Image (cartoon, rainbow, N blue to C red; front, side, top):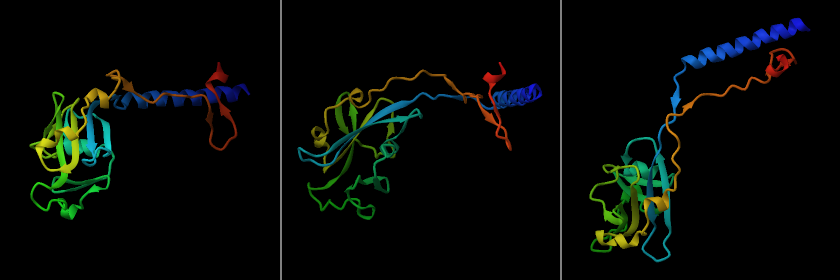
Length: 196
């Protein structure tokens, strides 16, 4: 009986030492600082049009507007750098401007940026625009024109993203829990607590 306990103690000790040795040579994984940006989408011009907002976390120092939108998880249809449809609202990829017969009645997904509390029509496509942490991008399914800024809601980054900053520099390693180890081919187990 004592002989078995001593043998199990040495097996357990070998397992713990192996775990410590392997852990010492594994690269430590540091928690990365998360950045956040907001996305606002309005699905039409009517007063009751659906409006969605998302707070999107990312670890990069910046990312494209298209990548920000894609990280919302919504269904996106795009063609040649243009947003054709979002969550089923819009046009197919092979006819991205299907609701643009000409004139002033062209309806498409326009791209916007919230700058100093005001919506500004983007002069760059979403693939080219670099979104910084704390920024808010907007997407509007409506008639064309930079004068549609009032259709997007007056909202701020803090209205969309209410995030508590996590501490930085935290080292994440697996936590050992050597309480019960079942030995192969036996019904016996041992516990570190039973050895003390």
